[in-house]
Amino acid sequence: MLPIAPLHVLFVYGAKRLNGIMEFGQAVSDEMQARANLLPLDQREAAMKAMIADRKRIERDVYWCKCEEKRFADAFSRAFWLCFWAVAILLCCIFGILTTFWILFVGSVIAFIASFWIG
Image 1: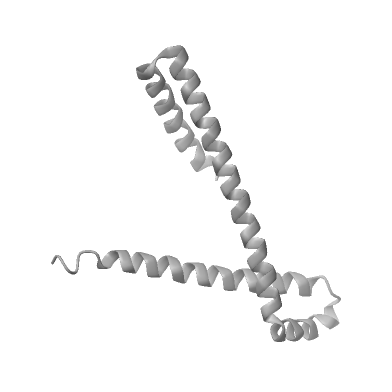
Image 2: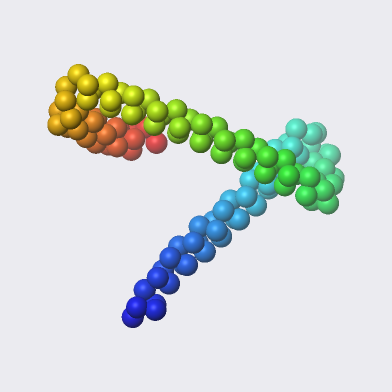
């Protein structure tokens, strides 16, 4: 049983990798469709054929767009955690460690529950 136990990690990694590939392909397809929709109706089919032939350029554009989105998400996450710890340290200085723990714990639970309604 011991040699088989870590095998599930490979399945999870493979599933995430496959999901990323399929998501990227869908983003490329959506970008081509969006570009084709900017043209008049009689030119869309020819434009789609031209974009399929030039798929590498569109893939590169989508890749850079995804990279920019990831950079923004990382910067936003970093700013959020900096603010979180600044508030935690401030509360700890004002109320003490135990009270600060319960304030942050209850606030985190409320935010977690609210996140289901926000989407």
